[in-house]
Length: 361
Image (cartoon, rainbow, N blue to C red; front, side):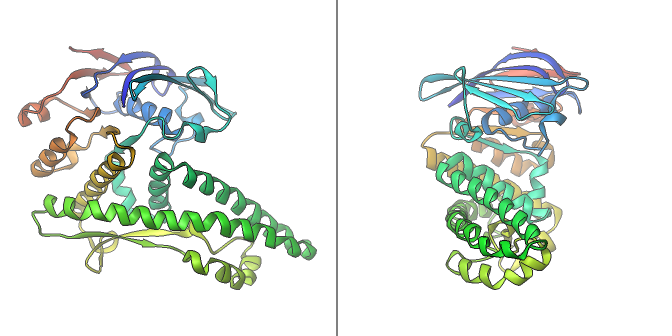
């Protein structure tokens, strides 16, 4: 699985851009705010339909323009594919695979598997539960189309149930129709809960040895799934929460309120860990994710590293760079000294300056 080339039009600070990549290590270097991260964002967006920054389409389109285009040429299982994405300011994005428009954006998931690591991944640990659910959902949707189906339908059902709860406050007779949405919520939500539990369990198998090695055996990191409700209790707790739901006009029970903890023993890193411990834990999580994806899809995903070396000490830099192996990697940095000092081999270098990219080899 490799990304062969990328074309951008009116995307972020790029008016027009055409790049061809190497199947090995691709380095994009230059000063801050020049457009390096935008290239990684475009690759990730084309593979997942989502911005790693959580940006909306209208925020991605070049200033004073109404639309943007991404074209990504990839190779998977020795077969070439083309992904075209049309971003519009006031309409849903359009996506085509091999020139054939797709009806549902979810059809794109799994064609290109990507692992994105940036300094903002520290937010997975530091921020609220929504950040951690987003991490789980983005990765699981790439790996498991059944999960994506149930998550999509759960979110739709949740929105419809919440809307009904608001209507019931004006028309109590509508209460008799609530059971329809309850059964669907339980059906799809139970799959979401059980799949997240299994995924976190598999992540734990990888993250434990990785983190021990990163910390010289000094720390033992464990992930703990904190479901809002266990799937076997979902029905009873949803029924028991009815009066509260009606009062607040929203659904208070379900996986939309799940969380995940990062623990050293019984110590919650989010609350009591140092900045260094949180940063190392984020690195361990991404390396565990990378390893798990390789095991599931039986090949290496594409690795996107956005200015992460500057956030790590020398030992962790070496560990990360040595973990790349034969994975196609896109790596941004401010200068090449980091790689020269590490005697790290790379295949293609791009200099990025003010929305212009020059290939140096």
